Length: 367
Image (cartoon, rainbow, N blue to C red; front, side, top):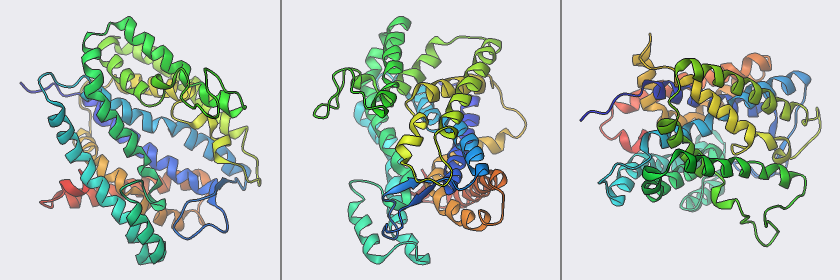
């Protein structure tokens, strides 16, 4: 039996993919490595805004687009959770792993060695990154951190699926309530408060099992099976959620960052963490709005194609983004440069992924 096509998820993937590139384009204006950092490494990164314009536009673009990663998480949960009945754990892991892991390894290697071609790394650093690949991503591929929690979500789906099949709406709300409470932890910690049993020798506080991306997994399932609202109600709820949480997320950075002063990213980005109440609300609201798309609209074939190639686009985008940033940052105003860098990167990644997709072994490169 053919599955019913969920059209809005294609639009969601495209929007989230572009938002990721907006976030990384914005980083040109407030993140920099320490002067003595080794070539090719992103160590001792500091936040430093050099103008009032950069302060404003980084806050707006980067802050609003912080929903990108949670949107991807919810999409995976929406489609895959609960796991298909009768499907073995092994079959599930093999099916998901074949799509995610080979391209991931391919690009971990590419980000380790390819920068040698343009002097973006040293031979010693490239070799060090290659040896480190089994454990973590190289410095030039900071965006690939996302794949590790994504894989953890896939590992959790077979474990949680039996419970989700029989859980009531109230039971899921209870878990989501604990997840919501756990998203306040970064703020407690930011102001030096250890709560819920958390101390320096015990980071595993009372809410730890409900914290992190597992909450978005449960939320994805809840949205699919328990939110049966009309489009009118989705819009009525979604717009206030997006507007209110976007204002909070944008202002959180704008009010903390100081022009010309080096600050720690973990401090000024406190409300930009993906598991914070405001980003959770922003993600929820945007998901509701996009879920009102129930049928293909003009241009859907292109949207569908981009959606299919979005994983490969995500993997390669930092190569293009660094290149376009070097061209556009010096000659454009920040308000124009950020979206232009993201758009040029997005188009280039799509064209490259499309060309690669015609190769017989493309699955092992772009998924």
